[in-house]
Amino acid sequence: MASPELAAPSLAHEYQALLRHCASAQQRCSCTLQEQQREIDRLQAEVQRLRAVLVLRDSQLALVRAEPVAPRPQLRQVLAQLSAPWLTRAAGS
Image (cartoon, rainbow, N blue to C red; front, side, top):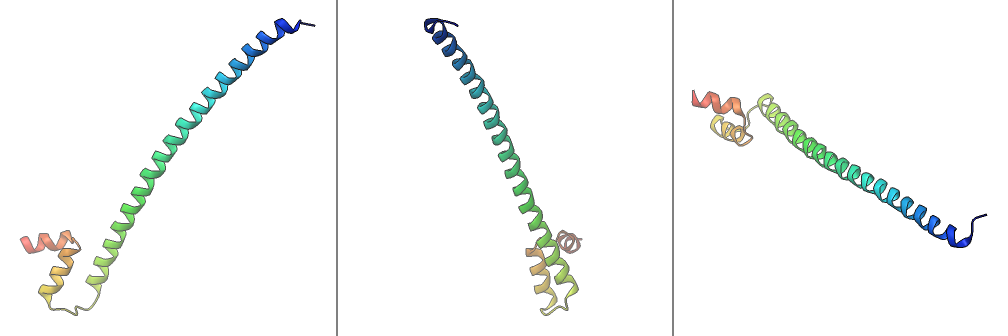
């Protein structure tokens, strides 16, 4: 059996190596979590943008399909505010 004087430095050395290994693993996990959070943020922003595009499209379709309740110039103004590119092209030509 090893003497206590020899066992203590060896045990301290192993403990330091274990702590370095744990710190390295923790650093890798932290980096991975940060990358995942950036990807989640990017995807959430894309979902929000796509929802806005969908709402705009549905609003434009509803206005086109509906019976005009306003005179034609006012309807064009509303559609232009909804940024209907087909309306601005038709008005410009």
